[in-house]
Image (cartoon, rainbow, N blue to C red; front, side, top):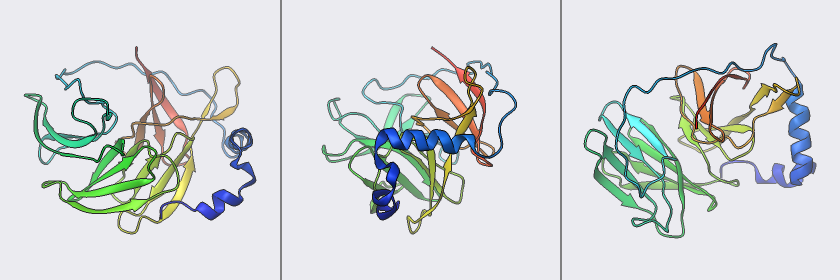
Length: 231
């Protein structure tokens, strides 16, 4: 089972308010940034059509197949929650597999020939063959499932808290967890970065979406070192 339910149950900070206070205190420990994360710019290099029935929550670009994998949408939408392969050039869904209506699909990632998918509140994830979408297995965890990516060795998971969790993709044993922090512009103090979502992995860093801000975080120390704001 992913996570350590016994440790969480015995943790005196299991109360949300106490947990938030504990996270804030932990964020102040260790090395402190000298300046807040810089606000970077961006430019749009291409635009693609996207099916309106799907969220962009669970997205993975597969360079080998030149296809986008997509792994979430709501049961209230026309096709329910599913994983799908999408040809970006034509906005064509080339293959898909639906989840039972009781599941709300969230983050996805691919390691080798396997596609991993989280669910939001069902505490279960699924493993598929990335080409055929054959269901190969499932795993359990004791927290919400939000964003999912990998660094080639570990699955990296977020659950809405300021932590990134690292799991073995074969055994689903938690290897470590990392508190994500940044220097607050107003407070001048190291602050936990909450509501982490939409994870990717690029050149040793984890870009993540936090309420209309794209933040990239170094996995060495978990410190946010840049932001992009849109909207």
